[in-house]
Length: 277
Image (cartoon, rainbow, N blue to C red; front, side, top):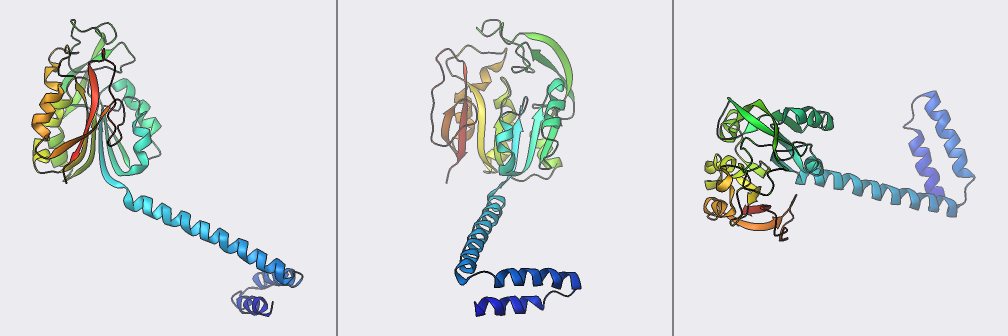
């Protein structure tokens, strides 16, 4: 008890104003009415709370420290998958070609300063325009390629309108923005994922992309779009096998070392590669 009173008396000297001292005297009198057991209990609870607070603060610091620097998300649609990645990256470039979805994305991520929404069709042409075929399934399968009438999905992904949109070549975009390394690259581009990834061949050959996930077409499938044969998985192997290893496959955002078979009647799947150690 005497130790507590000494601490209180010394702390009292810190308070300079009349109001501060008056408030502290009330606290001091309150302590005098408490038994040693009560005070010890209060101190134990206080320090337990401080330990928990310190742990929360440290975890927050570690999360910020461990956040990867840069994510490229190409073909974000309405941002459903992107929303789960927001706090994992210090900076995100989100590309979407469909003009009907751009405002949806801007509104959804308006409070996140690390997210940059860019309206453009990412392809092998830079700073130009191209026609985008908006699909009947709420724009989910919109592409600069036209649906293949020989594929079973032709009615699901049929074009309901065509719009003209600006284009971006990612290699040129990186040069203009002085981007030297991409931690994570994710694309969902409806038949042209390989074309776009191949524009970053210099980054791939020099190991300047940490993780790559793309929507690919199965090697034995009927092309979903006219001209999408180049998006088959075997072409990715030729581009990536020297420096990357396949780490997962399935559908949606993939987790390491999980290989999930998609249904037999699906012509496409997501595949993920990471840099070899």
